[in-house]
Length: 324
Figure 1 (cartoon, rainbow, N blue to C red):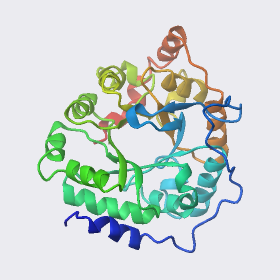
Figure 2 (tube, helix red, strand yellow; figure 1 turned 90 degrees about the vertical axis):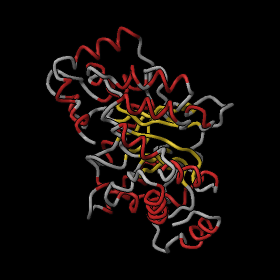
Figure 3 (cartoon, rainbow, N blue to C red; figure 1 turned 180 degrees about the vertical axis):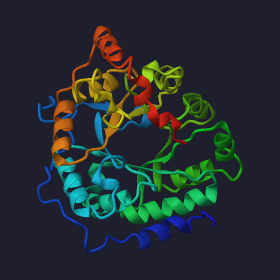
Figure 4 (cartoon, one colour; figure 1 turned 45 degrees about the vertical axis):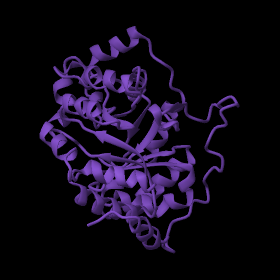
């Protein structure tokens, strides 16, 4: 496949919005806070995402995990959750080509709000042509002609970096897509080896990185916080936290008491700009947003106390390190 100027024309003409797109009649019209006005208590704090110049709420919706967004046959529940997320002021939506029907579900709702949201997806392909094909498929599913953020998904090994940055690697597709204004920003994600992600940030000027940020990971012999975040801060790369509650395992007996501690810990880390968390249902989503709205920076003593609470369960709660 080639990626000439005709590619964007092809995408624009083939990504017509289907007549069955679900509308959002209950959406609040003004979800973007005027920077000159005081933030009302019903909105979430915002931070500028690294060097992108884009302000995003500190809490975004994840499109995989224990959520109907990634489950077949759950379109009704997924659509209801996406609509509620928009109503609650969520503007960052995270998905990936490999998250089952997630992109399709988001494509049912988000097009009518496209200019108001920050839309991110991912590719697991390491070669240019494979990444291009997956990008085209993602755009069709999401019913959009551009992405705010396109990320290299779960990069786990140095050999993958070598392939990505080769002459026919996926980075070529990313660069071409940005040049053609199909993609605004580039990112790299990973939850296996922080050294690999840090090396990726050294090799290439990515705009963002998506990594685990939670108190259990702090106890791992190779923590993402101390290995990746310093490199990201040096290069002004946006850091997006994932695995914030570790699929709820941080709340095991003897662990954290709830999302207040989990989200408070992740978002109090210097250099972290926002987090993405999936929700099992609308009620859980509403609770998470309420916590995000009330976020207050934790001090070093409070952070240390949270870390201590998971000191005996950290190995079970960093299970995602085995995923590649």
